[in-house]
Image 1 (cartoon, rainbow, N blue to C red):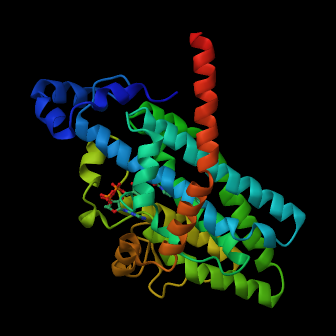
Image 2: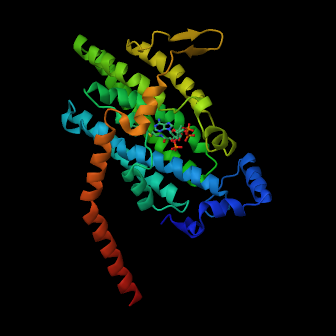
Image 3: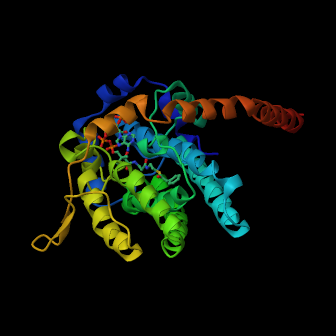
Length: 330
Ligand code: FAQ
């Protein structure tokens, strides 16, 4: 359905880069600067296409791998209502993965290729999903902080220059907003509960705070893709700008809950109107991205097994398609 760009894949990316004329590149940038949406069949620089396939596929992989930490609690949710809400949320993440693979396919890379890159370890997914979910309060912290960070990053993506990605993000953001609220609601209930429940909420905040602010990616000075992605209006804000917005919005929410953000240097700066915060341990982010986080191996092993276990479904779908194609041809 979405593979109309596949015909543009025949030449190698180097050849395509070399064939691009200065006039084509200039005309393309003019369209971007005029806020015109780029659509699947439009001409685009090969590097723009590669950047989008990289980002959209990594985004899709994050949604799919991101089902695991919360999926771990589906059978242990404290009430039937909480279980139903969590189940709906985890299913939404699967849907997000599918819309995003669909958006990626419009650029001429098939879903099978994108998934192969995830399973081989070539493609990344968000660092945040390599941390364990130890208590029920982690379901609250993930919804509140991880979905909260995801929304902060993804609302500007609704204005991304590439039409199919921008449009996919609209529905995703609406669903992420529900996810964030259900997480905050879990935290609020725990914080109004017994001392033990409040301590559980605090412990979850302690463990998820720093990984959540690392989700926004390396600092601007180390972000190799930001300058070009912002010039192409794929990214509308830099990693540091979004991180700061998230901190500014989230610290008052922690205050409302009566929880302490685990950062001794956190302080509101009256002059700038923003929170100042402590040094981020970039070595932790680099380690997790390099595959050495607490759960990287477990997450990818589980994904590979799920993929292998689903082989019969893909085979059956192909056989069914072939049967109908033969009938139609006859
Ligand atoms: N983890 O030059 P930059 C969600 C990589 S969805 C792992 O700054 P860029 C919903 C980056 O890929 C969460 N790798 O890169 C949910 C690049 O490596 P590469 C996912 C990271 O692309 C909630 C290198 O570092 N959201 O949470 C990370 O300009 C709950 C250099 O970095 C998206 O994917 C990281 N945190 O900016 C689901 C949003 N950060 O590719 C379930 C779309 C950076 O050269 C449960 N993506 N890297 O090998 C983006 O906005 C951007 O791609 C950034 C990175 C901001 C993530």
